[in-house]
Structure formats: structure tokens, C-alpha cells
Length: 174
View (cartoon, rainbow, N blue to C red):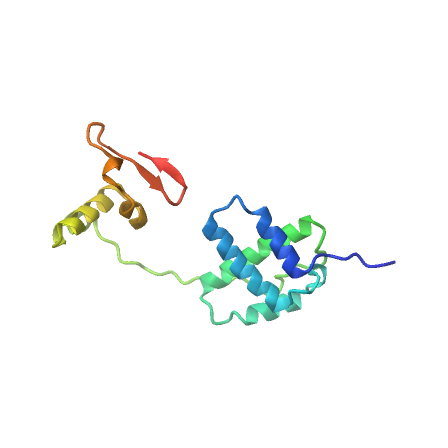
């Protein structure tokens, strides 16, 4: 009985990325970077149905110098790709990650300003422009890119509203 052929790694990655076109551009770019490196690691011309857990383990050994959070993110992205491949009937057999555990991400205590320090922050700026930017950030909680993209027309003094495009959710907000 002839064996079933499956797509090559490069074709499978291209199809998977194509299926995710509704996601944010940055997500797609990160997926592509991780999965293309992964495909090169196991062989771009290798049929996806013949990738083994040992090849996955070997690929992750090349990532040993990465931070735990980057390692886990690569593992997650490749894991979602494996689910897609299983759903298409390309992959059977053992879980690719049986010997590739998640890594523990160390907890980092970041410096946080108290509410009083936060309220005083704008007054510490020498430049009026910097003082205005800090005041907007402190009182709205906007991200730096959202503050930087504000224009005079985004301010409605009568309604006491500020129009902003939220970069994280890709939505307009007032």
C-alpha cells in the first residue's frame, strides 16, 4: 500500500500562515519568523508527516540561549502549527513536544511609581511639550505610541473627550 504524501514543511508553513491572515501584522510576522526557522531546522523539503519528536528536540536545542519567555513563545507557535497540521491529517503519532518542556519564566519585580509619584511626574519635566505628554499619559493610561499619534483634532474640549485609536485592540475609543 503506498504511503500518504503530506506537504513539505515550507508548503505547510505557507498554508498555515495564509490561514491566519485575519490576525495582527505583528503576530503574522512573528509566526513567520519562528515557523520558517523551525522549517529550516527540520528541513524545508521534508514532508511534515515525517517530522519526529527527536527532530523537534534537536531544533529546540539550537534555541538553548534564548530567554525562557522566548523559548515558550516559540514552543507555543510551533504547537499551534502542529494542531493545524493534525487537523488537516498531515501529522499523526506522538506529540512533537513530549521531550520539550515549557521553561519557567523568572518573575521580575518592575519599578512602579506610587499614585503620588505618578501624579507629580509631569511637573518634573523641564520642557512644556514633555510635561504635556507625561500629563496625557498619566491621566489617560494610553500607550506611548497612542499618545504620540494624538492630534489637536482628537481633542473635544466641549465634551471633555479625547479620541484615540487603541493599538492593542485595533479599535477607536473616546
